[in-house]
Amino acid sequence: MLTLEPEFIAPQDGTEKQDCESRATRRWLAAHRPQYAVLQQVYLGDDLFANQPICEAARAVDGHFLFVCSPPRIR
Image 1 (cartoon, helix red, strand yellow):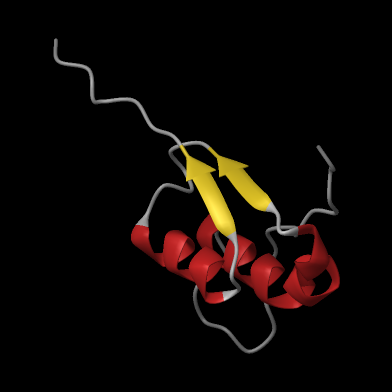
Image 2 (cartoon, one colour):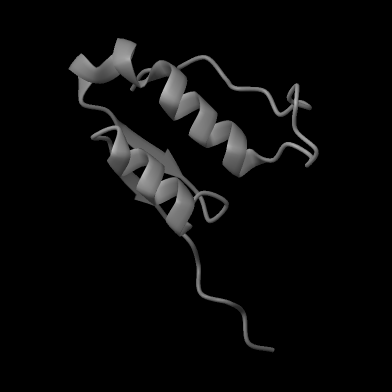
């Protein structure tokens, strides 16, 4: 396992919307994928990352992913 540098959630120049985890994740993939491509990495994440835009971003950079989420609780 290799820990990589983070992408901080911060207001981005020229955007009107607030930054979020999803945008920061997609930025990180686009910015850092070329330098780590040789590692054929598998991205791990919880239910915060288990959504279509992030899965598509990981696949767009030829990455593999394992994102997990639990079923909703029924009370």
